[in-house]
Amino acid sequence: MATVITMPRLSDTMTEGVVAAWLKKVGDTIKTGEILAEIETDKATMEFESFYDGVLLHIGIQQGESAPVDSLLAIVGKQGEDISALLIGNTTASAAEEVKTETKTETKTASTPSEIPAGVKVVTMPRLSDTMTTGTVATWLKKVGDTVKEGDILAEIETDKATMEFESFNSGNLLYIGVEEGGTAPVDTILAILGPAGMDVSGIAASFTVGGTVEAPKVEDVKQDTNPTPNTQHPSPNTNDRIFASPLAKKIASDKGLNLSQVKGTGENGRITKSDVENFTPSAVSTPVQAVTDAANAVSTVKPFVPAGEMFQEEIKNSQMRKTIARRLSESKFTAPHYYLTIELDMDNAIASRNTINSLPETKVSFNDMVIKASAMALKKHPQVNSQWREDAMVINHHVNIGVAVAVEDGLMVPVLKFTDQMSLTQIGVSVKDLAGKAKSKKIQPAEMEGSTFTISNLGMFGIQSFTSIINQPNSAILSVGAIVEKPVVKKGQIVVGNTMTVTLACDHRTVDGATGAQFLQTFKAFMENPVTMLA
Image (cartoon, rainbow, N blue to C red; front, side, top):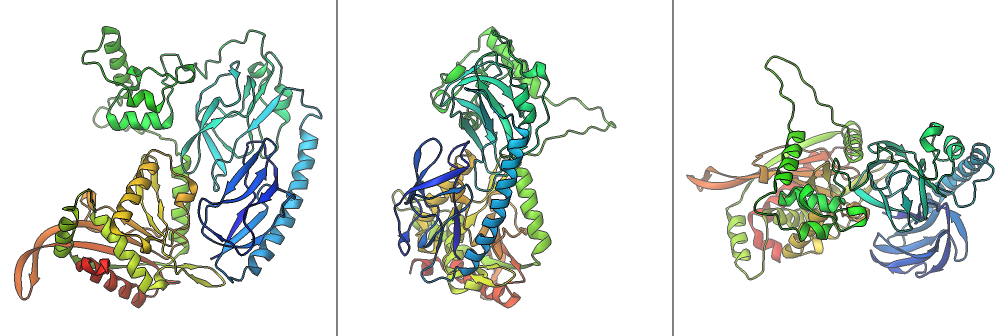
């Protein structure tokens, strides 16, 4: 299926881009990671790489031309694929966007002061992923009155996919904060204002409404003296009531069971970095002061005592990821007519084969890797299960990209193995381990979670024997994998001890009929019960 690539927003202030040079021409084959074009932003000329594989079918913005962010830049798909519908749709969308842009321009002219003083910079909520519509400020690393240099980390922004560091592209003093720590705001709303120390920016903050409505701040919150007083809502990273660390450093510390209050940060303003945690060696005996600090930290995490018979509720604010998961799963469950097919597998041969494979030097294959490989091969034989529903047509994917559900702290992420059917068992194992690690450390890129044609969810490691999953749209099916169970089974008329595993296929009845789903499971079963056939 052809994919529309739009003009990216490569900086926080970019509203349009100029194609400085095309490095590919129509008809060229493109691979993920290859440079498509050089895009000139308001700050620099940057290389723009492709997140897709295919053939360049159409160029929407010619070399030397400029266009607004999100305009049609190119279309990538299969050789000879009909893209007329996409071109018509984007022509209509472009016209609507043009009207929208004109309206925004008028709004900005009417609501923004006619002249923003020289040296003042309005920083807006960035769009840090392709699907991001709102962002949550997880942590402010600067407070009002601080000096900010270009390249300094201003804040950690939580998107629908991960928590990411947001750098400043400008220098100046932080005069105003538009979204408080823990607050959520739409993309392009006012995030902060930078400028000369002591400048009153209350008028700018009150009237700036491009991209979203911002409540006018109180004058006393933004008016700065020549010697600004600290903002108690945004304590310095050196204060004792808050520990400032990068998301990756927090994750590594959590995995190692380290108390971050014991780690000395070498980053900006004492911020704890990845290397600080990795190089930290906990002391055998804590000092009296450290012991008190540790005790205080431990007390702060203890839940309040609730006497028997009394009601107690705890409210946990939904993260952007949790909101996105809820929205997408609800849409899938309420729009796709789900039905479920369950089958039991004899895993004795799979266990023996895995033991033989793993006896080889530097080789490690899991049962999940075998499930992924068997699914990919079965999808090639039953491509209708590897499909997508559209109102005007059913799209049959003849490439196999399997999404693997990974549980993370805030919910669920689905990294995608591209062209899974072409991968060996060991390649699948290495790729899954790499992508799962990135997902859990919040370092996975949006392109690594896009393009799945089928999904696998495995809860066997938690002892779950059988369960059903909600389809990860636009896929037409998802396979739920249970635990391997040792139990009495009948073989050749005799009751013996065997190993079985139950899998359940959830199907979208609009694209996958019952017989089609059943045939897929029979093929999958044959591969799993005779793993040597997957090596042919």
